[in-house]
Image (cartoon, rainbow, N blue to C red; front, side, top):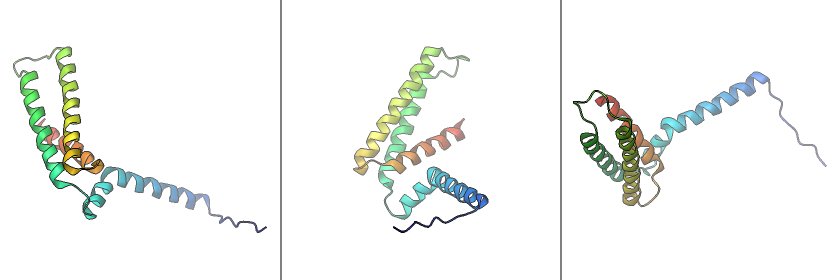
Length: 124
């Protein structure tokens, strides 16, 4: 039987390789996956934009109903109901995204969440 040869590397090189793997994972997690999906022409643009419009419209209508500008303090049960409804609206927009694209739109959903975060951040 032959002994397998194990390549020996220094601790510093090993640590740098691990750091590179972590950076690659972070890149893919935050933006790389979306860009790869767009580059490979797998990103469902129509489904993404329709779900953005659905989510933005419904959350705007919900805010008009639940959030009163004239009150300085919203009762906790109203805010709890508001955020529960925001979760349901997000679920609905994800369902619409999946129905239109015909598949599980992972990167589209991720981009939808990012777009909503940017839009609401700019609004606030």
